[in-house]
Length: 363
Image 1 (cartoon, rainbow, N blue to C red):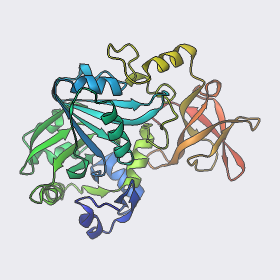
Image 2: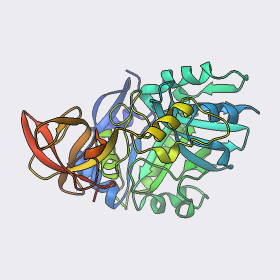
Image 3: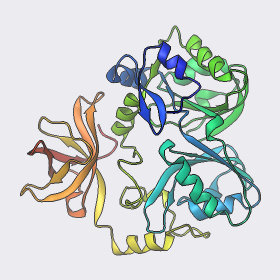
Image 4: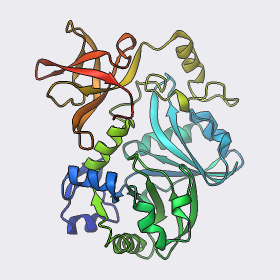
């Protein structure tokens, strides 16, 4: 297993550790619910340094990005980020990712999921037919997500960037906690506000930044948080998790990601024609959110059935949502069963437990 520069910090804080995407990662410290509420109501810090980062540079960098991603990156100007996905030749999702425009038409950073670093890199390299300068900087890049309604206020003394006025999906490079060249981004995977910071671990910078954040948040009770709370937080927002809710067999149109799938882009992307055909013909299944109406926790791969017991889909993610005090989930169902308020059943231990389709984000 690989370690991040913060592994010793996690162990010293008593984190429960487990393997995730080849990394030794903290799952929880004081408990998933405790950490979940810390982020929803105050602020928490996540080590997500296992994520992958690629730099693409040169006059053909944008063209390469346009050809392999579904969104329109030509709209990005310096300091803007964009959510997008890589699509395969069959219209499936290779990965979902963030694209950071560092220098318009010239330099971009792509942030990909930890489990897909090698797959994504190989795909991009295979499509790099115009000698775009490409660097996989995943192993030397640290990423901390400081999330929650009070996160920016707690951190404002650590940088001259006006964190509280940094618009959603924009970023600045600045000094942070005395460390230069930190990319400070108004993004996150929790729906609770806050920032994410990217930096290279030179001269023990990782420890400096970690310690400075906890010193700044000492009186505000900022908490270290693990991947368990990150999962319950993202699920309450209805955010997709790669490998659960989206994968190589699901199309962005089925996954409700039509808004990042620009089918009229002037530079065609992989599977653009196939996805346009899918849109014209109409999808036959759809990713929906649901809440349990009877006692039971939905889990990945549980069958979804109708009132007659006929299988109509599968659960992709599910949990007992701490903020909502009810069991919720995501799953693919046939289109005729995808409307809000449709009654469905989740097969849990050979019993069909009643649920209903609801709007995302969950309330």
